[in-house]
Length: 123
Ligand SMILES: [Cu+2]
Image (tube, rainbow, N blue to C red; front, top):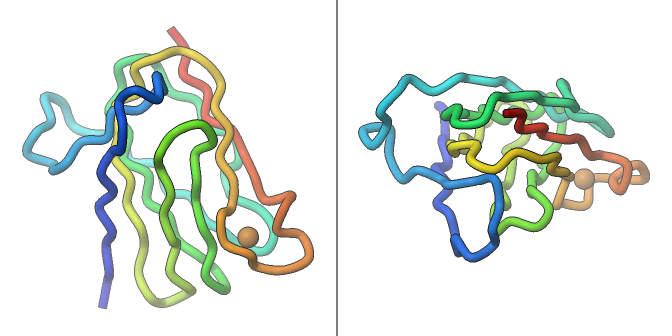
């Protein structure tokens, strides 16, 4: 069974890179699918680069326990289900160039606070 979590954007006032799209039917282009694996205590890949304007579909999967995925400074936060329980999906349009940090938002052990990465939105 695959459980998919569609995340919806909170406030657009966060001036973030992200405009989270509610459903795939609202795309005007095919999303760029990026698969991210969480495993104590890293995300792979941990550095993600996209061009401005790209619709990004992050598919978040765990190789061990539950993890979280939060993009710092935005309202976006997901639980990545533990191994074998499906994945979380986050879709957004990368609108604002910059460098954004993501991190695990669910305590997963001693290295939890080191579990982070970046999304770079280029011109
Ligand atoms: Cu963690």
